[in-house]
Length: 200
Image (tube, rainbow, N blue to C red; front, side):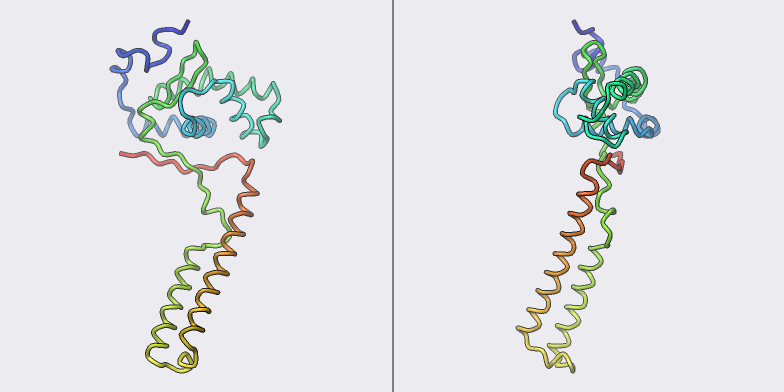
């Protein structure tokens, strides 16, 4: 049977006594990569997560492996560290609720202030947003030149100009798609890299 104080959401008096953690306390709690893995996993699952399941996924990320490839010793090591050190630290900061008696972990109401997400877009090889802006700028200059009859742009018909713009943006979109898929293949089983934001 779970302890009355094991899960804060089941104990109204405990919930009332929980104070809002300061920015410094929260960032101190999540500066450890393993604890960021915990928060990232919990934020993407509805409801409590079993500690064993959590430990397996964290161990997989840390060892650059899949969950099926995690050895019993790796899982046990992470499980013990989470139970003894990391989950109590996160609970003290008010961002997780840990029921040690039932081995269940969940994000707390306080964790809604945290936004932990993958730092994915910067890993593409080309700054695509700049390319699209450049194409739009060049297209605008050419369009104005056509309208003013500036040579040699006046030699291009409106249909030819439209086809040229469509082809340019189409090729850029194809390149962007290929680059994004290539990055996703590289990152498919890799441990997440994070951006952490804390709402005031």
